[in-house]
Image (cartoon, rainbow, N blue to C red; front, top):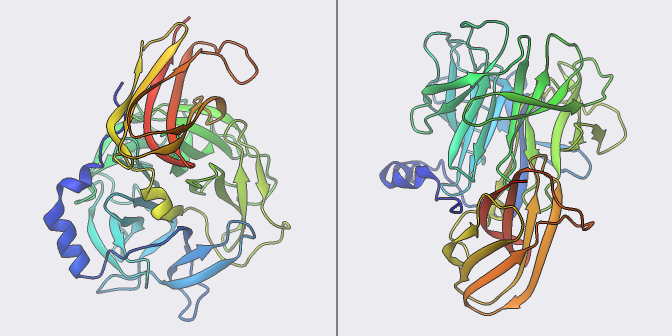
Length: 390
């Protein structure tokens, strides 16, 4: 299969130029974790944008979220997403009319431009919805309550990044599965969600099928907090692969937690005392470290695998535009690294790496989908997927 393609938003160069002139696109350095939540900053009372220290959970107020006409925008239960190719931060929530909308967010002062309303049949469908940009496909996803048959479950949609319009992909099953938080892993392309299943009270982690919307239960977060993690978004550190979410003590108190991709278990990054910031939903990493995993950085041809599907050995072909220190890593659908092929120093030009189909312990992998990531000095420069057949 071919490696990832450039995000589709690159095709809208004229629109991006206008936004840059308006000051809504700002250069960044490094990877910074951002969050949406209730405003405990200087002006108080509104939704606000924050930065976080992912080692301590400490949050720093950036500004009150506001459009040109109003501060009365409700995004503290909504979502955040970031397209590194276009350097655009998106926010999802309700505007001053109570209608769910997609916004373009200026992360320097939290000002916003409303790009458009999401789902006219149910105006409030995404006021508490999750949002995620998948760098491996260039697609912007959201989850929300569409309030349409079959009832009593949420749905996955794809949003148009220029207009906010929602295309319904499918419902989460079984009935009673409500998902409000969303996050895409930039290393594997896996779409994760937080919520609850089958009317259960405890929060849990899920993975989502990006074509059908079907939810696969991963595991419970294991939290005894008042609001747990049902409404929390998810963010994956683009370098370490660590996933984070918010565990909420109440509507106005929370902590930052790491979330195990394989089990769903959540662990506080600091002593379990609330930080006083009302954040339920939105987390996202922004920065050049994420841009570095965009396709075309360091490779002149896509990463390709054959045979695919594979029953034993797999060959991975690629071309480097400059010398590099190369490692090929393979992850399963839960995001766990199952094998790696260290190549060491390679010159510019065409190369082939071979994987024997065994995991790190020497056991043959079971049938299923694997994600391969090619890295140069730790930075992802190419991706593809392999279907292991038995």
